[in-house]
Image 1 (cartoon, protein in one colour):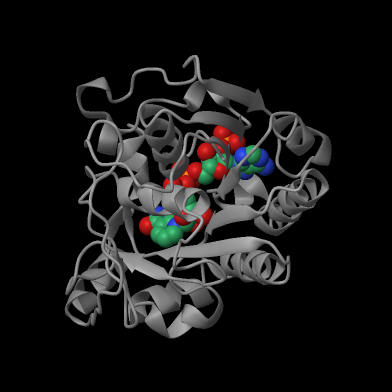
Image 2 (cartoon, rainbow, N blue to C red; image 1 turned 90 degrees about the vertical axis):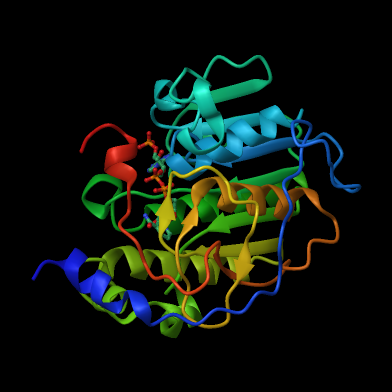
Length: 277
Ligand SMILES: NC(=O)c1ccc[n+]([C@@H]2O[C@H](COP(=O)([O-])OP(=O)(O)OC[C@H]3O[C@@H](n4cnc5c(N)ncnc54)[C@H](OP(=O)(O)O)[C@@H]3O)[C@@H](O)[C@H]2O)c1
């Protein structure tokens, strides 16, 4: 039995509780948060699937974005929010400053903060065989150090269900992965979370369930029990609100988020989303 079969077996074992529901916002949706003035948002890991959503939605809503990624030309319009424009280049948007660099290099991180940044989103990831055992922790520490030197206070960091004290909110099969093939990743995620919590910054650690590339649902549940799946587009909206809303209710907190109740961890569609499957 492969791991996906195991995951499917546990798909019935989720409990959810809704604490926070978003309605779609932004200029396209017509409604705009009273507190979200146009801002300049820094996005780290900018070419990643969740980060693409952050970049795209921020630009769509009239914000400016400064992004850092090792591969700038991988930054495309996301499938989830992008509609018919999905997969078109996003890296040449006029309100986007895109820096090719490595988050583990403080000099590269400093280039992002040459702009006046209002809020920071960290959506870094990857296999440890590609990114190394400590990229998340080292990179996030570099970012927070640069933030402090520039007086930037607000940060949203995407980690995962199962990280830190949310271990028991991960479905059982996923816990097995965390203890085996994903052990190094979760050690790095846990250290990353600890560094953020000790930073003194206005942080929100965002712990999503299984990520998809579906269109946004506009509903984001903060889950006390086991978390189900969520489109990256919804995670991005939550992160953008976290850095733009002065009264965001989860500052200094570690919400687990899911857009569905009563479903379980679903297959990570990242490979298909990248056309590699
Ligand atoms: N897949 C799931 O179901 C799931 C569920 C919950 C949480 N998560 C977590 O959610 C987060 C986002 O996931 P995702 O799938 O959207 O991410 P992703 O597509 O894997 O993107 C991660 C990004 O990090 C960038 N990156 C890696 N090392 C870097 C470095 N040294 N310097 C600068 N950028 C670097 C990569 O860009 P380059 O390689 O181009 O630099 C990549 O674009 C991850 O932390 C993931 O573990 C995933």
